Structure formats: structure tokens, C-alpha cells
Image (tube, rainbow, N blue to C red):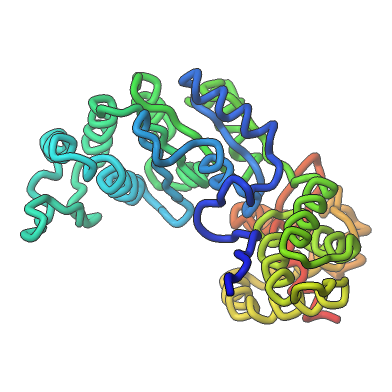
Length: 377
């Protein structure tokens, strides 16, 4: 008996038939990249920025090379170079002997550090951070290689705002200098901290000012996601109540990854001919929160007590807060002082635990919000 594939994909590339909506954003992205323009793609985390790029472009195309790097956990220019170099090596240099030879010949500053695979008779990119002794020069060589590539390169840099946290002071200007002279590569700068991304690309004082077309990725509209979910349940001869989908959507505030995660479980647990209701979905949500609890505890263990106090206060609010330094807010949650709240908020915004949009503050990750609420009931 053939098992019906689960249509709610959470890892890997999403087949076209299982991709939900994003028609407008897909058309925009394809148009910009076909015009050889760079793109800044902004949304909160887990909204599907990288999936959108993969959906819009055929990663198997021979016309261009699509490369994706996530720099969220990098902390220096050398780490950035190590990750970028390894990605280009794996996705471009390995495709032919010619491109491999060109890679090793172009990256002269690392030539003594390449490894060697005796079975394949080819170099390997096992560069350590300590091997990158001239980061600015190595970066220049990497961009020279991209320009010499036999295919047009599209490079997606996820969580691009991370470069603003590197100890090196000139990273933005350095990258901008190289990127603006490339004819054989285009970039998608994806970021989840909208305020930082907007400053980087729309402030006249910053190197990347007006250097990329902009796409903002908001939550998929409820009706579109509801139709998508109902369709795939019906295709498998299953049913799901609209109220159940609404519960998932509202609980996770439309964040795509969480919607898919819960609906994947709901689809799996619903037998052919049966109907998934709101109670069933609530059990799945509760189990998911428990499953994630160790990771969430560890994450919050890294922040200070005043920062936790502010985070807990935000979780107690029923809606986003306009002024977290207002006396009413501070008094209601027995916070210490305005200055303490300001200091805590600054760090929580940097850690992407708190977000500010349209002048309103809220907890950035709805899963953390849910977990805090569940602990304080």
C-alpha cells in the first residue's frame, strides 16, 4: 500500500505543488534577479525567506549557480569568509576540473592550506580560521573567482544583519566595494531584524544605501493558508475543521515554520476518512511546546534577570506594547526603573528576543511567548 506523502514540508526544498501562496513575492524576486539586481529580503525569522528563493529559482539550472549561506552564528569577518569560501567550493568549484583549478589558483592566500583527497585526486576545502591570515585579501580573491565563474552566481546571505555585529569596523563598506563591481553575481540579502536591515539599505550614511531592491515577507494571509491546508487534507481523503487551522494560525501568529510543523503532525495523526478538530490541534501544540522546552530554557538561561523580567512582562500583555517605558507599564509589572527597562530592551532587541515594528514592541518568537505563558499559568 502506497503511503500518502505528507504535504506540509518543514525541511529541505519544497516541491512546487506543496508550496503555499507567495505568488506576488515570487514574481517580484524572479523579475529582480532576471534584471541582474540585488535584493534585500526582510521578514521575521521562520517566515520562509530561504524557501522562497529556492521556490523561485531552479537550483539545478545550468544557467546559474545558486548558493545559500546562513551567517547568523558567525561572529567575525574570518568566519564569514570561511563559510562563504566553503559554500562556493562545494557548489561551484567542485562541478568541474576547470573550476576547481581556477579556485585554487585564484585563492592564492590560502593555497598552502587546502587539503587533498587522494581518492578523488582533488583539493578539499578544510580551511581553519587560523589559516585566514589576510581576511580582506582572501575576500577579494573570492569575489575575483565569482567574476571568473562560467555560470552566473546568485548568492543568498541569510541573516545578513549579523555583519553589523562583527568586531571589524569596515565590513559593510568592504563588502559593498566588492559587490558593486561584480557583473557575474547577484545577491539576496535576507534578514530578520527589520530595523537593522532598513538602516543598512535605506540610510544615506550606510555603504549599502539604495543598492538593492526590497521585498518584505509578511505572514501568508489566513484564507490562503486555510485553503491550502484544506485542499491537501481533502486530496488525502482526510478532513480538517477551519477552526482548527485558525487555532494554529492565531497561536503562532502566522509564522510559516510553526504552521507547517503543527499541520504536519495534524496530517500525520488524522486517519483517512477522519476529521482533525481544534482539540486535536491543541494537544499537538501542547506537546510541541514540551518538546521544545529544553532548548527554550537553555536560550533564556543566557540572558540577565532584568532582561527576563521584561520578557515575562511582555508575555503577560494581551497585545503589542507601544511604550515599554511608560509608568503604567512599569508599575503594572513591578519593573525596577525606566533606565533598567531601556537597558534590557536594547539587549533583547539585539538578541532578536524582542521586536519593534510600527512603533509596537512584542516578543519576536511566538513559541517563546507561548512557553513563558504556559509556565506562568
